[in-house]
Image (cartoon, rainbow, N blue to C red; front, side, top):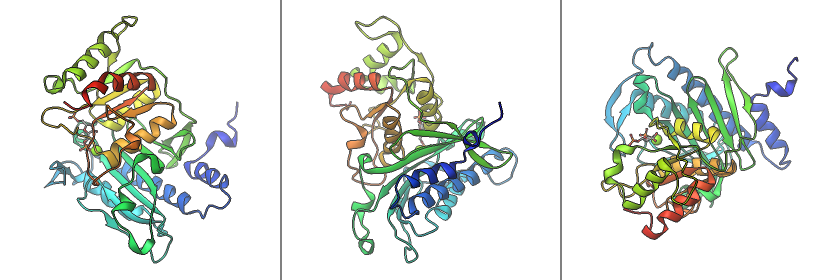
Length: 342
Ligand code: AHM
Ligand code: MG
């Protein structure tokens, strides 16, 4: 059967279709998503050349606001994002995992309607060994006046997200996004340099068959978290005795993507040395929570939906339990007595 035009839908035309559903749309949001897809293509090309080109692999020698070693590719991806995003002045402020302070954008040329927070290259400590890494982004609407951009515009909860997505640089590069109505995945065709629709309206299974957690931290978890992981492995107490299989890459985008498609739960619980968890609310947990909920799943900090949490700073961290709805709700119930903390 020869492919119909529908079979070859690019991300740009998909985003345009979305715009047509909102006749009053200015095109700013469409332009912004297109800018992000361009940034993803540039980063993807560089990640794919990581083993070949000089001055791409390795550390810059500096640490970021989180105290983590900045990789050369982290820096590259961050710069690409900043350069590509909001080229029409659609963005008023941006925040990045790699930068201590948010960047105020010159909006003389545009509406400055949007706020973007991103992790330009998540899991970057895996690059040197050819393990999948990713980009995560969240898009919010500016809350106040354009001439008075402040923290209230930047520090918004996940429930206010307009769109969120991630790009996985894996065996192929995929761009997955949602603007609230369905989660859609596009696979990069390297021959033509386009993201083509490959996974329309992704739904995640209701129950998980795999769990993802760094079990090396088990001695530093609370008793409740230890009990949860024991039951994920061996079957829930009072259940059918069937446990799940374990899969952990240590690269959130890759672990999340696999679990989204196959049915799994990802946990990054608090530990004694990290009572607030490790993952960042604004650039990691909230965008992924928005995506998983649009696909039928759920995300919690152990006590409430990740989407409800009001960030108090750009780099706030949060414990994360995310994936199939049934299992995350069960974990939240198991943790409810302990307040989710250790
Ligand atoms: P990064 O944003 O500095 O790359 O760190 C986040 C990464 C996630 O991709 C991953 O889920 C987690 O850190 C792994 O942490 P750990 O090595 O403690 O298991
Ligand atoms: Mg990260």
